[in-house]
Length: 113
Length: 113
Image (cartoon, each protein chain N blue to C red):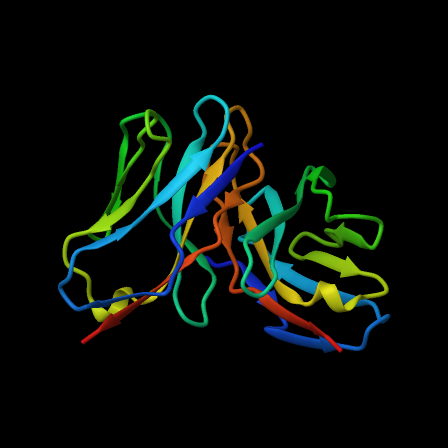
């Protein structure tokens, strides 16, 4: 079946550190891949997406590249800020489907000043 | 920017009681969804709704659950005879086209006592 696995949190980094949150997926064909972010007390917001192999999604300094060969979509940011503290969810929509999103468990990120 | 609005933010209900969770999707959106997240677990798809009918539902969405779009603005999730294991954060989402991203509300935290 379709599933998403992401690294366990919490992840604690100092401001300006480099961030990687690993995400791998299981799906047939070419699913669409997403990162959602949930800031404290708020709902899920789409951070970035990629819909085909080798596509790179980017937003707010975050990037993730759709790697078909490793079935991965790791989230990276070169220099994190305190305001990036949130829970990050890797997710997919299966190929030829446009309805349900399949989420990972989420990774809580704490950035220390 | 238009938002998906969910009320209440926190609902406390006695086991066995019925509860209705309310959502106001973004006004020109046509596709509607409910997801839930049990504490510490993944965000799980419950149901999708389009053209006044359910388009897909998960195994979780059994006869205890129902959805309704009673007027042009609200989208509700009804849980009959609530159980302890229904305690979770429930997210509503909507989108305005098949290839468009889903926009999420801030969620309703449901606590069953």
